[in-house]
Image (cartoon, rainbow, N blue to C red; front, top):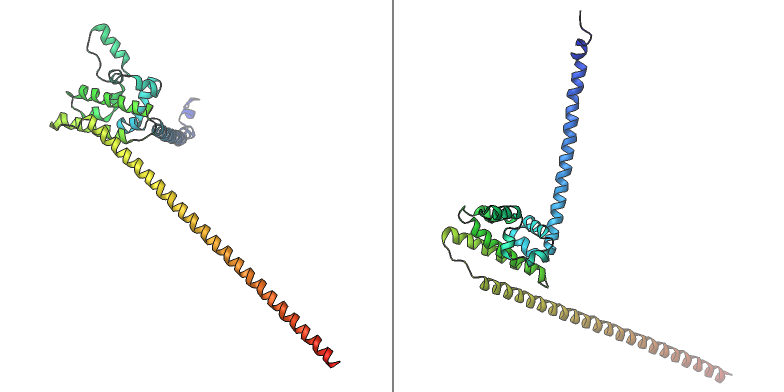
Length: 259
Protein backbone atom coordinates (compact mmCIF):
# COMPACT_ATOMS: atom_id res chain seq x y z
CA UNK A 1 0.00 0.00 0.00
CA UNK A 2 1.18 3.49 -0.85
CA UNK A 3 1.16 6.19 1.76
CA UNK A 4 -1.02 9.19 1.00
CA UNK A 5 1.88 11.69 0.74
CA UNK A 6 4.33 9.49 -1.15
CA UNK A 7 2.79 9.84 -4.64
CA UNK A 8 2.44 13.58 -4.31
CA UNK A 9 6.06 13.95 -3.24
CA UNK A 10 7.23 11.86 -6.22
CA UNK A 11 5.00 13.59 -8.76
CA UNK A 12 6.74 14.65 -11.95
CA UNK A 13 4.52 17.70 -12.37
CA UNK A 14 5.62 19.22 -9.06
CA UNK A 15 9.31 18.92 -9.89
CA UNK A 16 8.79 20.14 -13.49
CA UNK A 17 7.10 23.33 -12.24
CA UNK A 18 10.10 24.05 -10.03
CA UNK A 19 12.52 23.49 -12.89
CA UNK A 20 10.52 25.65 -15.31
CA UNK A 21 10.51 28.61 -12.91
CA UNK A 22 14.31 28.85 -12.77
CA UNK A 23 14.79 30.36 -16.26
CA UNK A 24 12.21 33.05 -15.52
CA UNK A 25 13.97 33.93 -12.28
CA UNK A 26 17.30 34.05 -14.07
CA UNK A 27 15.82 36.28 -16.78
CA UNK A 28 14.35 38.58 -14.14
CA UNK A 29 17.73 38.84 -12.41
CA UNK A 30 19.46 39.45 -15.73
CA UNK A 31 17.10 42.35 -16.56
CA UNK A 32 17.77 43.88 -13.15
CA UNK A 33 21.52 43.61 -13.67
CA UNK A 34 21.35 45.20 -17.15
CA UNK A 35 19.13 47.98 -15.81
CA UNK A 36 21.60 48.71 -13.02
CA UNK A 37 24.55 48.66 -15.42
CA UNK A 38 22.79 51.14 -17.73
CA UNK A 39 22.06 53.38 -14.74
CA UNK A 40 25.72 53.19 -13.70
CA UNK A 41 26.79 54.23 -17.20
CA UNK A 42 24.37 57.19 -17.17
CA UNK A 43 25.58 58.33 -13.75
CA UNK A 44 29.22 58.03 -14.82
CA UNK A 45 28.60 60.07 -17.97
CA UNK A 46 26.84 62.73 -15.86
CA UNK A 47 29.79 62.78 -13.41
CA UNK A 48 32.33 63.16 -16.23
CA UNK A 49 30.35 66.05 -17.74
CA UNK A 50 29.99 67.80 -14.37
CA UNK A 51 33.67 67.38 -13.49
CA UNK A 52 34.61 68.80 -16.89
CA UNK A 53 32.53 71.90 -16.09
CA UNK A 54 33.41 72.34 -12.40
CA UNK A 55 36.95 71.01 -11.93
CA UNK A 56 38.57 70.20 -15.29
CA UNK A 57 42.16 70.47 -14.06
CA UNK A 58 41.58 68.25 -11.04
CA UNK A 59 39.85 65.68 -13.24
CA UNK A 60 42.71 65.78 -15.76
CA UNK A 61 45.25 65.30 -12.96
CA UNK A 62 43.78 62.58 -10.75
CA UNK A 63 40.71 61.32 -12.62
CA UNK A 64 36.99 61.99 -12.51
CA UNK A 65 36.05 59.47 -9.81
CA UNK A 66 38.78 60.36 -7.31
CA UNK A 67 38.32 64.09 -7.90
CA UNK A 68 34.56 63.83 -7.33
CA UNK A 69 35.17 61.87 -4.10
CA UNK A 70 37.56 64.53 -2.84
CA UNK A 71 35.10 67.35 -3.61
CA UNK A 72 32.17 65.50 -1.98
CA UNK A 73 34.21 64.68 1.13
CA UNK A 74 35.41 68.28 1.48
CA UNK A 75 31.87 69.61 0.94
CA UNK A 76 32.58 71.84 -2.06
CA UNK A 77 35.31 72.87 -4.44
CA UNK A 78 36.01 76.05 -2.44
CA UNK A 79 36.47 74.03 0.77
CA UNK A 80 38.83 71.68 -1.09
CA UNK A 81 40.77 74.66 -2.45
CA UNK A 82 41.12 76.07 1.08
CA UNK A 83 42.58 72.81 2.38
CA UNK A 84 46.38 72.59 2.57
CA UNK A 85 48.10 69.71 0.80
CA UNK A 86 48.78 67.92 4.11
CA UNK A 87 45.03 67.85 4.87
CA UNK A 88 44.16 66.83 1.33
CA UNK A 89 46.65 63.96 1.55
CA UNK A 90 44.81 62.26 4.44
CA UNK A 91 41.31 63.37 3.42
CA UNK A 92 39.06 60.36 3.98
CA UNK A 93 41.29 58.71 6.63
CA UNK A 94 40.21 60.77 9.65
CA UNK A 95 39.34 57.75 11.79
CA UNK A 96 42.76 56.21 11.25
CA UNK A 97 44.41 59.57 12.01
CA UNK A 98 42.62 60.07 15.34
CA UNK A 99 43.19 56.43 16.27
CA UNK A 100 46.91 56.86 15.61
CA UNK A 101 46.97 60.06 17.67
CA UNK A 102 45.24 58.34 20.61
CA UNK A 103 47.43 55.26 20.53
CA UNK A 104 50.55 57.24 19.58
CA UNK A 105 51.06 55.09 16.53
CA UNK A 106 51.96 55.81 12.92
CA UNK A 107 49.67 58.28 11.18
CA UNK A 108 48.15 57.34 7.78
CA UNK A 109 50.02 58.34 4.65
CA UNK A 110 47.02 58.71 2.35
CA UNK A 111 43.25 58.76 2.28
CA UNK A 112 41.08 58.97 -0.83
CA UNK A 113 44.19 59.69 -2.92
CA UNK A 114 45.09 56.01 -2.51
CA UNK A 115 42.57 55.16 -5.28
CA UNK A 116 44.68 57.07 -7.79
CA UNK A 117 46.75 55.05 -10.26
CA UNK A 118 49.96 56.92 -9.37
CA UNK A 119 50.16 55.44 -5.87
CA UNK A 120 49.44 51.96 -7.20
CA UNK A 121 52.30 52.30 -9.69
CA UNK A 122 54.79 53.52 -7.07
CA UNK A 123 56.91 51.10 -5.09
CA UNK A 124 56.18 50.37 -1.44
CA UNK A 125 59.02 52.64 -0.30
CA UNK A 126 57.86 55.61 -2.36
CA UNK A 127 54.09 55.43 -1.79
CA UNK A 128 54.15 58.05 0.97
CA UNK A 129 56.41 60.36 -1.00
CA UNK A 130 54.32 60.20 -4.16
CA UNK A 131 51.14 60.66 -2.08
CA UNK A 132 52.54 63.87 -0.60
CA UNK A 133 53.61 65.12 -4.03
CA UNK A 134 50.25 64.21 -5.58
CA UNK A 135 48.38 65.99 -2.78
CA UNK A 136 50.45 69.10 -3.46
CA UNK A 137 49.52 69.03 -7.16
CA UNK A 138 45.85 68.33 -6.36
CA UNK A 139 45.69 71.38 -4.09
CA UNK A 140 47.17 73.53 -6.89
CA UNK A 141 44.71 72.14 -9.44
CA UNK A 142 41.70 72.67 -7.15
CA UNK A 143 42.73 76.29 -6.50
CA UNK A 144 43.12 76.95 -10.22
CA UNK A 145 39.67 75.45 -10.88
CA UNK A 146 38.08 77.44 -8.07
CA UNK A 147 39.55 80.87 -8.70
CA UNK A 148 40.39 80.92 -12.43
CA UNK A 149 38.30 83.04 -14.78
CA UNK A 150 38.31 80.57 -17.69
CA UNK A 151 38.14 76.77 -17.49
CA UNK A 152 40.93 74.85 -19.22
CA UNK A 153 42.57 71.46 -18.78
CA UNK A 154 46.06 72.72 -19.68
CA UNK A 155 47.21 73.10 -16.07
CA UNK A 156 45.89 69.69 -15.05
CA UNK A 157 47.61 67.97 -17.97
CA UNK A 158 50.95 69.61 -17.15
CA UNK A 159 50.59 68.74 -13.46
CA UNK A 160 49.94 65.13 -14.45
CA UNK A 161 53.12 65.19 -16.53
CA UNK A 162 54.98 66.44 -13.46
CA UNK A 163 53.71 63.52 -11.38
CA UNK A 164 54.82 61.13 -14.13
CA UNK A 165 58.26 62.73 -14.10
CA UNK A 166 58.41 62.36 -10.31
CA UNK A 167 57.65 58.65 -10.62
CA UNK A 168 60.48 58.34 -13.16
CA UNK A 169 62.75 60.22 -10.77
CA UNK A 170 61.98 57.76 -7.95
CA UNK A 171 62.53 54.75 -10.22
CA UNK A 172 65.32 55.83 -12.57
CA UNK A 173 66.76 59.01 -11.07
CA UNK A 174 65.80 61.31 -13.97
CA UNK A 175 65.59 64.89 -12.68
CA UNK A 176 62.09 66.39 -13.16
CA UNK A 177 61.30 69.92 -14.31
CA UNK A 178 60.64 72.72 -11.85
CA UNK A 179 57.08 73.80 -11.17
CA UNK A 180 57.82 77.44 -12.06
CA UNK A 181 59.08 76.54 -15.53
CA UNK A 182 56.07 74.30 -16.21
CA UNK A 183 53.55 76.94 -15.12
CA UNK A 184 55.29 79.60 -17.25
CA UNK A 185 55.12 77.29 -20.24
CA UNK A 186 51.39 76.73 -19.73
CA UNK A 187 50.70 80.46 -19.34
CA UNK A 188 52.70 81.28 -22.48
CA UNK A 189 50.82 78.65 -24.47
CA UNK A 190 47.48 80.00 -23.26
CA UNK A 191 48.48 83.56 -24.16
CA UNK A 192 49.50 82.40 -27.64
CA UNK A 193 46.18 80.63 -28.03
CA UNK A 194 44.33 83.75 -26.92
CA UNK A 195 46.29 85.87 -29.39
CA UNK A 196 45.55 83.37 -32.14
CA UNK A 197 41.86 83.40 -31.26
CA UNK A 198 41.85 87.20 -31.26
CA UNK A 199 43.55 87.26 -34.65
CA UNK A 200 41.10 84.70 -35.98
CA UNK A 201 38.18 86.78 -34.70
CA UNK A 202 39.64 89.91 -36.27
CA UNK A 203 40.20 88.09 -39.56
CA UNK A 204 36.63 86.78 -39.52
CA UNK A 205 35.34 90.30 -38.80
CA UNK A 206 37.37 91.66 -41.70
CA UNK A 207 36.00 88.96 -43.99
CA UNK A 208 32.44 89.74 -42.93
CA UNK A 209 33.05 93.46 -43.52
CA UNK A 210 34.46 92.78 -46.98
CA UNK A 211 31.51 90.54 -47.82
CA UNK A 212 29.11 93.22 -46.64
CA UNK A 213 30.85 95.83 -48.76
CA UNK A 214 30.75 93.54 -51.79
CA UNK A 215 27.06 92.84 -51.28
CA UNK A 216 26.36 96.58 -50.84
CA UNK A 217 28.30 97.41 -54.02
CA UNK A 218 26.41 94.71 -55.92
CA UNK A 219 23.11 96.07 -54.65
CA UNK A 220 24.09 99.61 -55.68
CA UNK A 221 25.12 98.42 -59.13
CA UNK A 222 21.83 96.56 -59.53
CA UNK A 223 19.89 99.65 -58.45
CA UNK A 224 21.81 101.82 -60.93
CA UNK A 225 21.17 99.34 -63.72
CA UNK A 226 17.47 99.26 -62.88
CA UNK A 227 17.36 103.06 -62.85
CA UNK A 228 19.15 103.25 -66.21
CA UNK A 229 16.76 100.66 -67.66
CA UNK A 230 13.77 102.67 -66.41
CA UNK A 231 15.21 105.85 -67.91
CA UNK A 232 15.74 104.10 -71.25
CA UNK A 233 12.18 102.80 -71.19
CA UNK A 234 10.85 106.28 -70.43
CA UNK A 235 12.94 107.85 -73.19
CA UNK A 236 11.76 105.20 -75.68
CA UNK A 237 8.13 105.78 -74.67
CA UNK A 238 8.59 109.55 -75.08
CA UNK A 239 10.15 109.09 -78.54
CA UNK A 240 7.30 106.80 -79.59
CA UNK A 241 4.76 109.37 -78.40
CA UNK A 242 6.56 112.10 -80.36
CA UNK A 243 6.65 110.00 -83.52
CA UNK A 244 2.95 109.21 -83.21
CA UNK A 245 2.14 112.88 -82.62
CA UNK A 246 4.20 113.93 -85.67
CA UNK A 247 2.44 111.30 -87.84
CA UNK A 248 -1.00 112.49 -86.77
CA UNK A 249 -0.12 116.13 -87.46
CA UNK A 250 1.17 115.29 -90.96
CA UNK A 251 -2.05 113.41 -91.76
CA UNK A 252 -4.15 116.39 -90.64
CA UNK A 253 -2.09 118.75 -92.85
CA UNK A 254 -2.57 116.49 -95.88
CA UNK A 255 -6.33 116.40 -95.32
CA UNK A 256 -6.45 120.22 -95.20
CA UNK A 257 -4.48 120.56 -98.41
CA UNK A 258 -6.74 118.04 -100.19
CA UNK A 259 -9.78 120.00 -99.16
